[in-house]
Amino acid sequence: MTLEFTISAPTRSRVGATVFIVLRLRNASHRPVEAHFLGRTIDILGLDRARALLHQLPPSSQRDRTLEFVDDARLALPGETMEWRDTWLPREPGHYRIQGILPSDEPEPLRTPWAQVEVSP
Image (tube, rainbow, N blue to C red; front, side, top):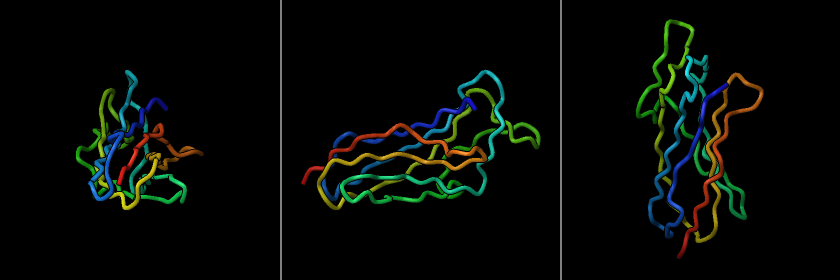
């Protein structure tokens, strides 16, 4: 599959300050791509010493823009992008790594690269 799944977040924040997280799924190919994600829950995994799950983000409720599909085959058009936004309110200082995880029909879910967030007191 030629879908790019990325995450954006600030590299620094403070305890109690809202961290804005953006996940983007983009068809990076020059052809339509068949993609089945309906009814799936996107996880935003946050790791620190506690290795805790930060959020579960239902795609249907957080979608800002829908991916265009062709016919009933659910083919994502070339260059089309789907975006989800979420927030996290850090409660403790520390170094956090966050990652988006999107289950699909593939054996392994799509995963964003890790983003680093340093939270100061």
